[in-house]
Length: 471
Image 1 (cartoon, rainbow, N blue to C red):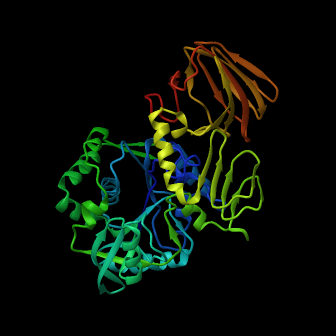
Image 2: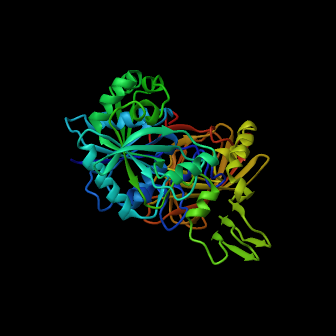
Image 3: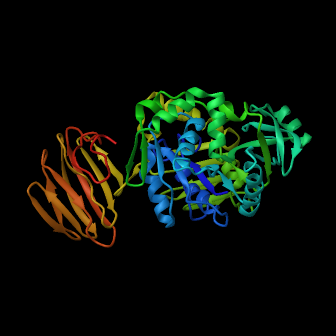
């Protein structure tokens, strides 16, 4: 049977803050090598016989996801946009309904976009074994062969052997350390990976049997589909009415046909900085350095530096993360408490919870390099052929200075071309637009001045990315 990968790319971006943020969670980060975690998830499918993958992500992340897939130069089966987060059971239901629309019934390989898997061959071998069971109407989950007691994972207890897998005896919540040690020593327990393989129709049948409310809400949501570029939107009101539930609770713990296939492939969900240190290549002193880092008498320390020199002297077991707008220093053993900092920032409505200083848009990106009372300075990069929306502002004027490339500027009733070192001025209330007609990136400096400089002071009249209605 055909395998259709379903890649779950949601996430809130809290456990690896400040590297990850609400609008740029960890699956879009490059934590090792040259590719992001999402891109690694897709490329490790190479060699498996499968149809183009289907992606499920949040509305806010749609352009980041589409761009990262575009960079790989591969086909996909569409990017589902969840109107609201409702956990994994409803998200997978949307994919299953979509996969069976034209009378087809593929095997759905459900993967998370933010996992690390070192041994791709072992991963693919486990998928092949699982496919043999899924064809027989089993709902397969992948159990990670644990190498140490982990209190941050749920566990799967295996029952009697069934061909190349085991009948699932039970799913177990995250244990304390003593219990986790007993699980690992017994050899009967696996870490719960959150990866699955089953027929699309089989999943829907079991979901309808055990959670008809979720099934009905997702079926209703799929009655109204709007295709926009690469994106698939479903009925917002119907999906928002769907209960929030994981696939484990909704189906896997209820069905009589759950089977676990062991996987020993160097897996990690990178659930925090300590886990990131674990899975990263280290120097002779046990350090993981990325960026401009100088160290003396430093051991077992993780340093990520985005834009400046970080120097360490006489430290060990630390996590040091420098981004353009935030610095984190934590003991590696306490790195799970980063979420407590995030909660403090949320309570204070700090923008650093959601946004990096550098923000990605469908047309490119901008970096807020300076700001003060009544002014803000941005460095803007526009991709070749891309165009910002036709817009105006009620409260701010803008000065644009081209650094590299060519800008096609609409300024009121005039359209002009600007090249390096040329500039223009956009008064308050004037309709304007910016486009890159060239073959290389357009970079310019934008100086905003006015009484209010928020991103919500944008009135869009025309937008090729479907954002006129606030999307």
